[in-house]
Amino acid sequence: MKKKIIVTAAAFGALAVIAGAFGAHSLQKSLSPKNMQVWNTAVQYQFYHVFAILFLAKLARYKTRLVNDCYYLFTFGIIFFSGSLYLLACNQLLDWAWLPVIGPVTPFGGVLFIAGWITLGIAALKNNLS
Picture 1 (cartoon, one colour):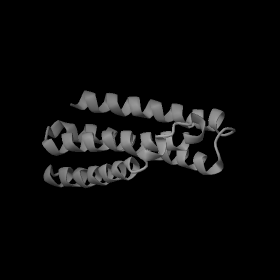
Picture 2 (tube, rainbow, N blue to C red):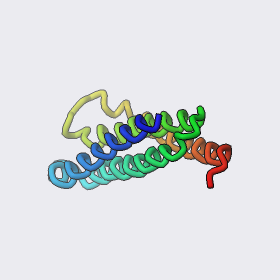
Picture 3 (tube, rainbow, N blue to C red):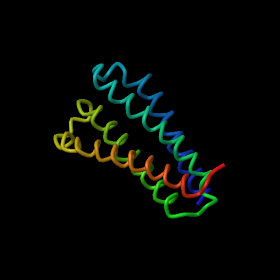
Picture 4 (cartoon, one colour):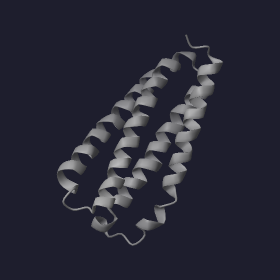
């Protein structure tokens, strides 16, 4: 489990750096300031949760269901929250008529993040971290 957690965090971390650089160097001229802000929010929240996933590696030694649940909540939170924001930010570039329909996916990803943080707190309490 610990290896899977670290590999996932590394992959999402690398993708966040790529997305941040791509936004700063390639998209800034193509996106409106509002959509650029949406893009940056996606990168920011992805990074926050990469660090949360990395912290789970410390708890992985306990091999509890809570740690496993937390891993999936943060992972799918990144996919739904940041992933939907990346797509929504690029709506005018992609020109996909169906794309605005994914708007409700973003708050669902946020709910997964919140559930992940609550689960992380419960896991820490149950495992008496010192």
